Image (cartoon, rainbow, N blue to C red):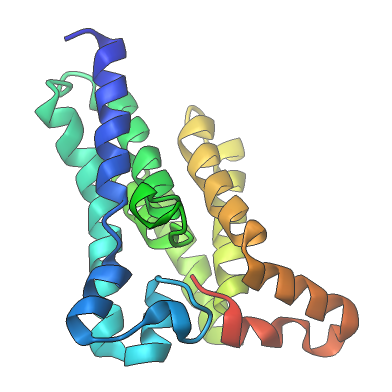
Length: 211
C-alpha cells in the first residue's frame, strides 16, 4: 500500500473512530441528556455534573481510549508498523477532529481534550506527563478546568518549541485543543466575564468550562 493511501485511510478511520462519543453512548445507557444539562457539552466534565463519577469515568475512558486506539491500531492494520509515527499522528488528529465535529450529530461534538490526551500519551509520553502535571496542579489549585486545559495546551506548544523534532507532533494537536476551547460558547462566556468582573473572571469556568 502506498504511503499516501495509508495516510488517507488512517485519516478516514481515525475520524470515524472519533465520532463515537463516549458522552452520548453512556448518556443513552443511563438515561441522561447531557445536551440539556450543565454546559450542554458531551465531555466527561459535564457528565460528572449531570451523573456523577459513575457516568463521567466511563465517558473519560472511552474518549481517551479512542485516541490511543487511533494512534496504535490503525497504522498497524494498514501495515505501517515500519514507520508508525506519521500514520499514528494522522489517525490521532483525525480522531480528535471526529470527536469535535461528528457527522452523525450535525458536526456538534465535544472539545476533544480527552481524545487528544490519549494521542499525546502514545506519541509524546514525556510531554504528556508534563501536561498532565500542569493540568492537575492547576485544576487542584484553582478548581477551574478551563484554565487547567488552557495551560496544558500552552505547555504542549512550549515543549514543542524547546524539544527538537516534536514541534509538529505537539503543536498541531495542541492548537486544535486550544481552538475548540476558544471557539466554544462556554469560553466566550468566560471571556465576557473576564471583561466585566476581573476579580472573579475565572469563576464562570466552574460552571461552563469543560475539559
